[in-house]
Image 1 (cartoon, rainbow, N blue to C red):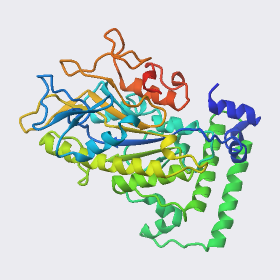
Image 2 (image 1 turned 120 degrees about the vertical axis):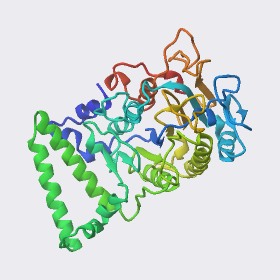
Image 3 (image 1 turned 30 degrees about the horizontal axis):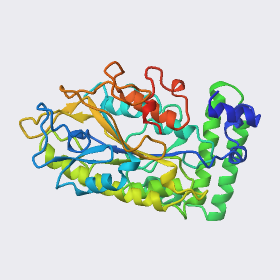
Image 4 (image 1 turned 120 degrees about the horizontal axis):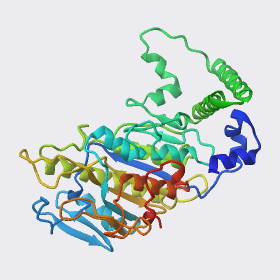
Amino acid sequence: MNRRQFLTASLGLTGASMLTSREGLASMESESERNFLFVFAQGGWDPTRVFTPEFDNARVAMEADAEPNQMGSLRWVSHVSRPSVDTFFESHYDKTMIVNGVQVRSIAHEICTSLLFTGGVSGDGADWATRIASETSRVLPIPHLVLGGPSFAGDLGAMVVRTGSSNQLEDVLNRSILERSNTSVPTLSTPSQEVLDRYIQRRVQVTAEQAFYGADARLSSAYKMATDNAMELKERRHTMTFSSGSLSAQLECAVDAIAKGISRCTSVVFTGSDGLGWDSHADNDVTQSQLFEALFGSLNQLMYQLQNRTDQYGTVLAENTTIVVCSEMGRTAKLNGTNGKDHWPFTSVMMFGAGISSNRVIGGLDDNYQGRRVDLATGDLDDNGQVLSIESVGAGLLSLAGLDPSEHILDADPLLGMLS
């Protein structure tokens, strides 16, 4: 029995109302529930420019003037053009874990992205953040807030809200979205709108209460949940601004949403100031260096916010929030004819914050620049162990959130060695 089923049984409800009693769920909120923030570097980063110091591997083209650096057990690539990387690791190595040599089994952006977020190639299943958010024991207006990048809702669409590329969510909440119509749309006064909202909410509740079986019950349940969340968001619109602009703006909004109890999981994307992303088939070193410097500059700001903000229970966010920084693929060991690097099916994932085995590097790369095998239970290198797949990392995240990975992914064992 999973958490959602347990809540259902303990509330003693039937039909669609089993999953949507806000009063019942509110009484069971958990102060210890872990939050997650996913940062996606879209396009495929080059791990050798930060995460994998392969200076002893003759088959890998490392940068000129780059050198290995280390704090505690955490090792990384240091370069004069990336001071923010050094600042981050020197300040937060004891809260950080790097997982190297993660296999994504493809060199196609779409397939790798689906694997990275869901553990599958079809894109039909829900992503890790949405699965985690769907199992929350709290009443949240937006369980999974997507401020940028891809998201896969699967059959859990009621759990996910996107801000929109031009902040459409903000416009919906304040009703200025009506001004975007080419046709004049009459507006209601605030009192009339409130009456209409109450009427809609009551109609949806009655529909859910009368739906007892199968798809009708599931759809009615999701509809009621989405309606209730929308109504609560309208009440919160004066204390929360949803931004989908720069990475720093996205991160600030994500932290705000977690701190105010609006979301458990948040997702942001970083494609650089020009929006072209990390797909550096030409001028790899310049492109990657600028992107990593900007990324880690924002991550330094994020860590400051997490250490200086508390949630609704007074817990410092750094103590109950896990940050996952990832890209859908890596890049080849050697430079191509245009000083770029092409797609490579092994990448790195960085995590910091609560619940992880920090001050540690898990995995690695062999002489052929392919991922080394590990003991998934401990995270230690083991030639007789298993290939470190992105599915195992995802299953490990589900375990970190208190979920049973076997209920969500069937063909991968979790990387339990990443847990503290």
